[in-house]
Length: 607
Ligand code: AMP
Image (cartoon, rainbow, N blue to C red; front, side, top):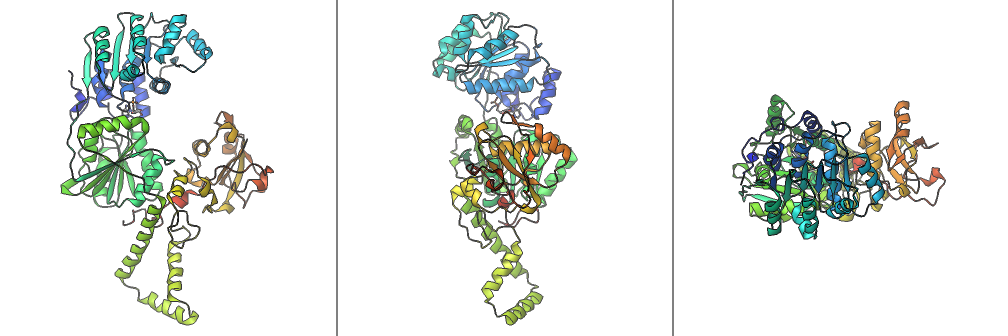
């Protein structure tokens, strides 16, 4: 059995693997830093024409492990019949794999990949097959249908991939798979991936694969017991970003390292965390060594509290004050997991590791648990009440600190004089000063005034998920936005509920196409066949003209200004749309509401 080279400290970089220039270009765009273990182990053999039998599950990067070598050896449009066929158990996986091929082939003009699966009409599939495709990704049943009808030919096939073979077995596709094998040219190269290796799969491999390179990802199994490990399954209307925001606020931490998969993702996430008021920096392989060292020095000296890193950039990182490791993106394998969480619990201190996993990644997560032979506890995201309780605690702490720091003589005199002049209750007076110190920002989430009560429940917390990206809930719509309405203008866009639009689509389009920071997008009201959105006044003409043509939910925005909107907002669409029956379904509070109260200093408040 071949042990993957990536188990060593330095996996061979993509650039040394012999992948084609166009594939390398696409890889640089997607921002993968190094091959995942399954990629390190299979790309080489596949490029040299060997069959591969790989034990790996979704989330390990196995799609790229077969797609990259196939694309490297493929001349698009050489033949109308496909040169590669990938069999996948489900429609979702087939689509996902086809999308991955498309992404990795973005520098291969004329390349065509076609997902084919049951439940979809034959028409589009037939047309595409007639025009010619390079790669077909399909579920076994539908592939066989096409083969039997003669609409899919496999006589030019060079690569056959079985993805999630054990799932196909479980779903009763095994005879179909055999049938496909028998109807492909004997010299085709085969890559078979399976999370487990039941006998039936071994038998297929034995019958149809020629001297395959066998790849199993070996796992290191030591995690320190001074690290508390928890996981959260993404869901409940809370996005990963929102979850991270809540952790930053409610989880007492000293310094935190957040792991993301790609270089690009580290940059984007670091920016978002910084925008929420935390001293944060990205650490990835694109950042020059001197800068990386500076960042680590800043982390040590408490100028930075949060680092968003890729696995490679964080290798060997040893900073005692890292109290928390967040696996924002699940690692490819348990060894990376062990390495990642080992960034905390240094020098015998206690540490915390939190893993975010999507439902699809559950199996990978279970695998990590099995390999490390340690249970990872489930956790609930801190509720809005918990976030608020933390804010109140921090506020009280800042009072204590101020009292302890002393030097209050001048203010004591002033307050005494005021009380004597106005004869007010000292508690009321202190409360007025506290409000003054807090400024306009509400102290707690969901509060309509800054009186400090943590009244909101968890439902409200979920309703405010991820600013605009997850949309606001009913309750959120009731809260008064802190966006200054007088600087906002209301726009109408011709895409509404019946077109299936969600607030996040609108925010995405406006941030990407108009360069408006999502923070400056005000309320969004989605109505039946159009929507209203509040944007800062003074949108440049060219941006306005461009936004008219942008597509969202298959429709152009055709944005227009709502007359007399100054001072009003999308929260009251009836006042200007004349469609009183169209109640807004979604509206969202200003992003500022989600900001921690005591964050003005760019430095994480004491927790
Ligand atoms: P898969 O196991 O193929 O479903 O891949 C899981 C996820 O890992 C996908 O989101 C890929 O885009 C991502 N991915 C694949 N290879 C790499 C890599 N070398 N570095 C970082 N991310 C990767």
